[in-house]
Length: 456
Image (cartoon, rainbow, N blue to C red; front, top):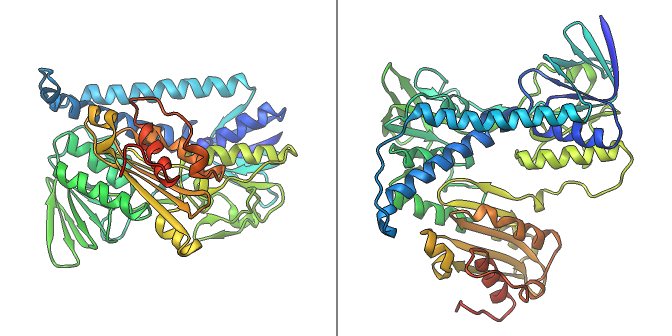
């Protein structure tokens, strides 16, 4: 057995792991990253990046399909899956090469292999032992499955869906959350008949009710069917189809069934019990700074309860590296973490929903919605949607919620407003460039400040 030592040993090189490593190296620490797959993790290789590449291709297809409306003669001839795959994989390969080079340039050691925490709080990889003054767990997550829909010939998770060599003609998607909605959007753009089955009573059930309603309207207009308040009872797969039976007795038949019911933390088999690291429902228990119940063992990313988002993991990794180095700073707040669903139209939000705000502040809540129909740039690019801003009456902005093409690019302004506890009166004097979609946010702030311009 060979022993190695470093200031910091990371178990997992995904979003949270490599962010921790980069910041720790920047702060002068020696760092070892143990990764059993590839640096970048799910986000880079099987999640955020490849799915957004497909969504962009789907958006291009929609624009070509609608080109005549703006006076451009163009026609959609179909999807070349081979070239689409090459485009997606090319982007991932470039980002992977860049990330690998970045870690190398910082002097970070990357160990390829499956690591496991020992009873002494070290990390064992095969016959090698890596001792760290501190150890950070960042093993990420994987798609959840359900017993009624076992993955097989015709039943997929998001990871298998990315490897399909065809566009299915008919798809049923189990789950109306972010992943389900994004795949529904891209497959519909590629020409598939899509039905979303969601157990709760609306799409994107964790978002503001106005966001769910706006997205549902847009999906109906696009011909995406939704079965809300419905649960899958059984599924039956054959060589060429899958039949889904719902709890109301109805049945749906499709070429593929996508199971998109969330993600589970990858914490089994990594030695948490032996090391004494406490967990709850598979998630690692930590304090606000990422400390586990074992001294000098930390955790970041999807294995920590809360939003399972790459950018949350990035920030948690930075925070942990700084706390280990003795630097003070604010903990990562869920309330100021932006959330984006990259469907068409997009949904983006930060802060409290109206319901959450009313639960916290009672009647001292004011809300304004601005329809994108009044925004020139939204009209130019052909999108519908809305901006909704929630504030404490005579107080700060509590939440910002957006629906429309490209609104994910606007949510940072909302994040600043919520994070800095700004009042609409503070922001109303700021000038938004014309014509831009950002003006829609400006209009909402103006209205809540009592001086609407292009709004009633």
